[in-house]
Image 1 (tube, rainbow, N blue to C red):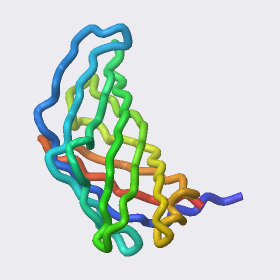
Image 2: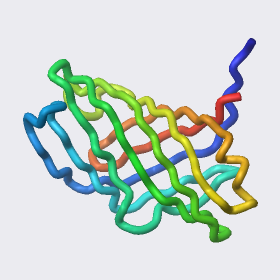
Image 3: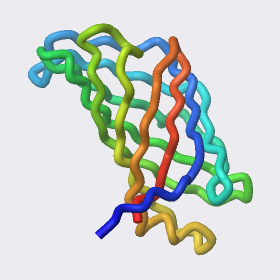
Image 4: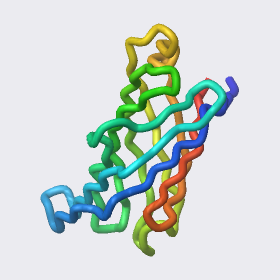
Length: 140
């Protein structure tokens, strides 16, 4: 059995300065709110809406950062899509030194995008200062 990766688009986000909660029971927690963001692809295109988009990142003692991101995307044609993903990156040498890997899931009731409810996506990203860029793929 072969895995096929079908492009979904490029996701770009501008992050605000994080709220830092050091030494919580699960590690250092950083909450990054997203100032602005979008997804641009042939099958999926839109902007992140509202103030609910954020990453509740946890950094363990070995420098492994665990992503926990939730967002609402409004497509260019008006559909609302909830996006949730978790993932990992290595921040032991500082933020932005290693790629970010994520596994997005989608939820929508809009008939035009209901196909996304069945998609398991993967993403590889990079952080450059406050700019986060992911390449998103549907796994088939």
